[in-house]
Image 1 (cartoon, rainbow, N blue to C red):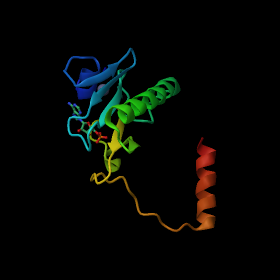
Image 2: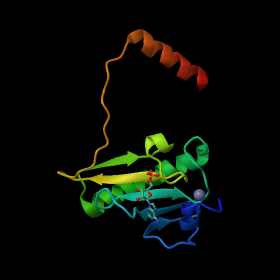
Image 3: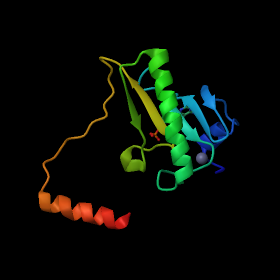
Amino acid sequence: MKDDCIFCKIAKGQIPSATIYEDRHFRVMMDINPATKGHCLIIPKEHFDNIYDLDGETAGRLFSLATCIARALRDALGCEGLNIVQNNGEIAGQTVFHFHLHLIPRYKGDDVKVAWVPHESDPDQLEEIRKAIKAAI
Ligand code: AMP
Ligand code: ZN
């Protein structure tokens, strides 16, 4: 638990939240400023700043839970699609520095933008980058 972390306090139930699901490891709650109807967050109860800190066991449990919540959103709300978003670092849009996964139900005509501009790739450069990443695993 990190003293000044709002999501630690929410995860542990010290600050109230609109909770959908809770177990020993996670709390799932409604996002207070939802992108769409049903936008919710999965928060581990243990503090991790971001994905770099997350251990494999928690990550496995997290994604298993995400599949369950995704189906619940589809069945309860009839969304036509779903984005899973997870921001790491300020430049990537992270504003709360306690790891969390966004589940954003999608509806025809909504105003969500999860987009990037695709660039053409240079095969030599791509190969260089592939090797660098492979070597770092
Ligand atoms: P991110 O930008 O990925 O760090 O996302 C942080 C998210 O947390 C935003 O979508 C906020 O709306 C949401 N949020 C911040 N404070 C609360 C809170 N007290 N309860 C629920 N959601 C929150
Ligand atoms: Zn925290």
